[in-house]
Length: 70
Image (cartoon, rainbow, N blue to C red; front, side, top):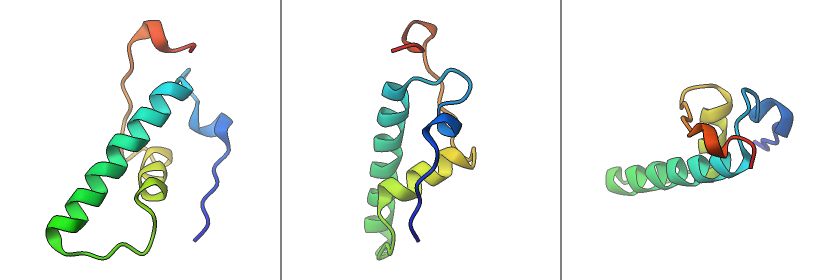
């Protein structure tokens, strides 16, 4: 499955690109480590799975006010 969300949709609520990248990377690492611990072979890339969770609002990104417009 090819997942390519609109950046405008993902960056709603004044979310900065920096916060999106950091949150996606952290969540992707959690997904990857969890799959490895459980012996699960992922068919999709952890980054794609993490970004999908953020778009679906399964993961909420909380960022400080001062970095929202970076």
